[in-house]
Length: 163
Image (cartoon, rainbow, N blue to C red; front, side, top):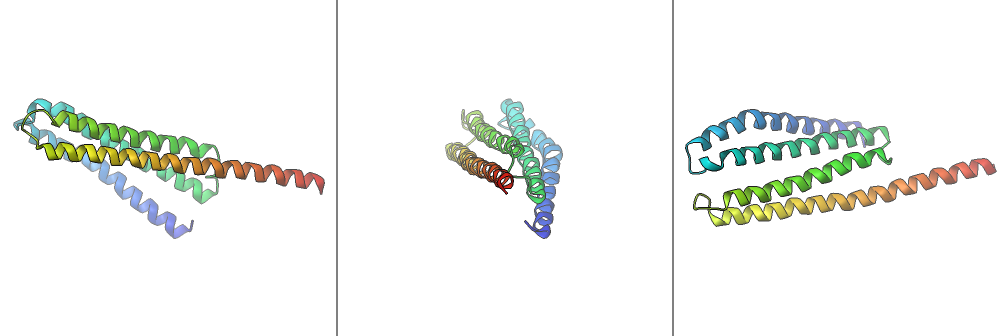
């Protein structure tokens, strides 16, 4: 990965992380004020907790991708250390899928939210869970690459002994 690509990706990740902190502090406070006197006032605390936790899952993914990009730049991504970050990404996506589903459950009772919105949240939950499965498949590819890298290092060591 070239230096320009790493710089551009880090700039995007930094902007997204800064934006998520802004949303977490300012926008959630505005959402709380907006929900205070509305139809969903009785579910306000649940909605706010779900939104904040959803933002935290996005922040976890951003930080883990930052760390993985650092490992790619250093040439150490094909190691067992990378699995820690990949597992965190998978866990964050599964958590986000569950949070979106729970948000749909919280919004479902009553007439405050249209049934189509709740159905859309179910679809979004399924899509986010699908992303977690895709990352799981990519994790399996990483495992194969790490195994091949270890095997190649072992064979190089054996060849060095022979020579």
